[in-house]
Length: 169
Image (cartoon, rainbow, N blue to C red):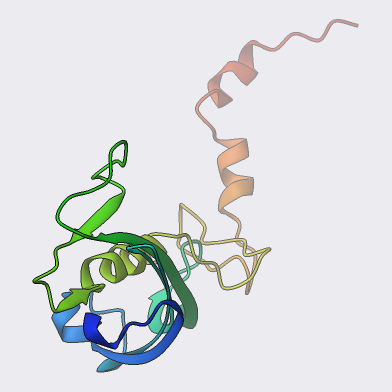
């Protein structure tokens, strides 16, 4: 996750790095000890554009039926930096990192961690048409239907009004 700046040349640069997952302080659902990171850096006129991509393996339950899933996600991000004493006029310091001339390395750890955390927040389903669990009895509705919905319809919160029903014939 740390790139040595002296290894960057003008134009396109390509690096394959290994990141220790423990150093990123990620939730337990992320599996493995290391994360392979593919980094491409475009260097021009003091600006550096870092594009990174990694394959992430994790275990997580389906958000509807709680079946345990093994997932493989692609995590990708982009970081822009400028090498110099200060950022050029009109450049937003929230969007572009400043790399001072005395800096020898640049870390992508914070951005990589942020992208992974955003990926982990996405909803996950075992299949597109997952029916989930019955809210009454907990039955997995993908495996078998339950009688709770029929009973609830018959004895719902407005069921008492049925005795006031008039036949208008």
